[in-house]
Length: 366
Image (cartoon, rainbow, N blue to C red; front, side):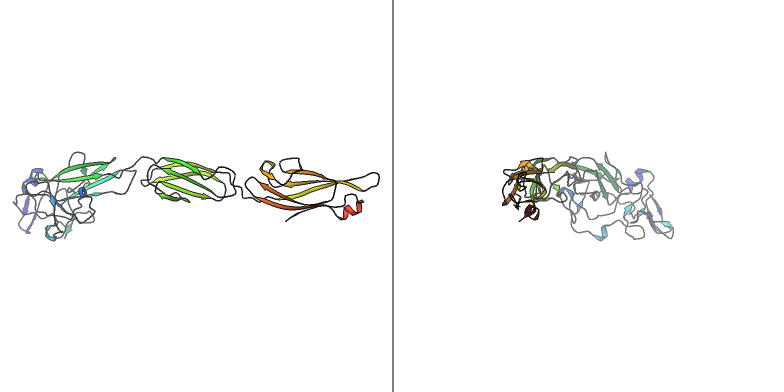
């Protein structure tokens, strides 16, 4: 260490490593997060005397912050003992570099005060970067590196998998503080979707409820709702729908499941008369019979009643021969229970053509 008596300032020029070791440290403490106890703020961990394990301290002491030779508070320590300001730059005054204040000749028997920060503590499928910051220059444990090329009181490590370990952080005088690092929020496993269920797969005119489960907590997919937990979901379909549903867990991993609802039938039944064909008795010219053709909106295999005595001509067309006047009600019913009622009227049977033509058959919805 070199001393400038003319300016009244003391600074450490960190060129040979042993020079820094011999000068000792008088930096003091910061507020520390004690991750070994699951705290988030307000916990203080200090190194004990003679390189002890460290314990919990009290409130932050303003006299125990890193100070520059001009009395300012430093955010960090440079590689040559410079005072680093909060912007990450070397602090200067009147163009002169400000160094961290040290007491010349003071013996360093105090362990560094350290705290750890995590790039995220939320569930993630990425890496977690842990940064340990000390109140003085520290060495680099195996597997760690300096967090930047400027500061020698910050080290970092990239964790690609969950791990709990105790890291020994030593200052340049050999004093050690232990800090427990706990990374338990990395999750790269995709969720598994199971137990896909439909309230019914039979033809229905009601809504269909679809549900499924997952093997871990996931975010609620759009359009769905939780069914009692973050691992069970349901959705009510009022119309037929098919597609892939994507589920995303809390760390961002995804899985998908095919959902197909095709059994909902809420369409009304309708019928219309296509035509009628009149047959006349050649001996007297009177109407002897009328053949009626109608068309129904749904195929024959979906009907359960209403066309008894009619002849199916195609999936949707039917015919019937009438030899007497009728005024009857036709009630159409499909398999899911949709119904429609029509009145069919046929008149003029046995009458001459004029009567028939004035009273053509009609099919009227009730």
